[in-house]
Length: 101
Image 1: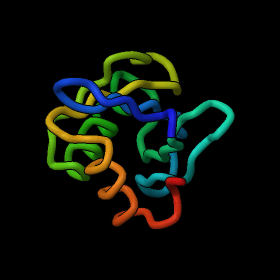
Image 2: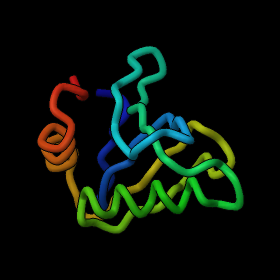
Image 3: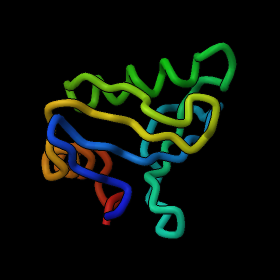
Image 4: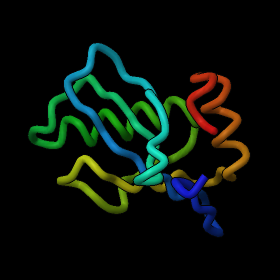
């Protein structure tokens, strides 16, 4: 999966965000853009969407999360610290079965 790239201190994750959903969740993988599709409940206004993304991925992975690119875009790159690609994939597969290939 090209949406994930391991670094020496964590993993970079490319996501495509769909705001104003009924609940937070990973809804699939876009093979054309190599991005994980993420639904969030917030609207993209005054940083609310970015805060929700950081909070939910932090809760999901139990690791420090920051947005390293795409602060004002629906296409974002997250950095999740102190985790490997395998660990990230295992967490996603456990919580959202069938969404990562």
